[in-house]
Image 1 (cartoon, rainbow, N blue to C red):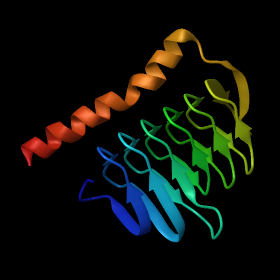
Image 2: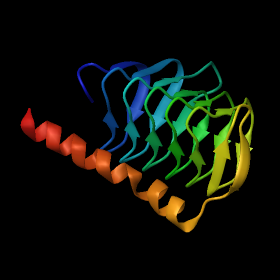
Image 3: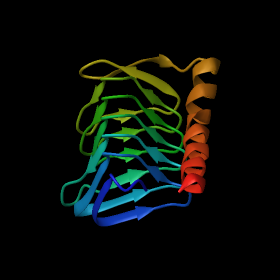
Image 4: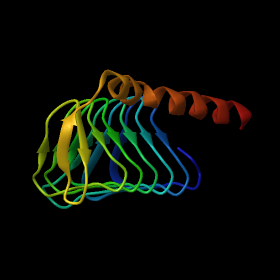
Length: 152
């Protein structure tokens, strides 16, 4: 976790999770649980309401300035820069929520989907190239975390 990130309340981080500068994880109203090797990038906000915990799977990328609120993000998904995922939504494993997209309350996104727009809609299944990029995106941030840790 970067010194300029803020973690409050009931927050559980899995092994090799990285939380970058300016990110805010507020587990003050319910739990936030983040799986192994997930990265929460600069300026992202994770929060929840009572009865609406925030569950983030393993190897997830949460992009810069994304807002993830009281929802479930399954393993290997990528939440793009500035995207918003609201209470009760479920983003399926391996899905890509495009930059700036808004996934509304209670929406369920199938696995391996490309999701775009406001309000977000599934455009199509991911291409093989997109699937490879989404599933491998977390690796860069695991390596960066280790590099920065080694530098002190």
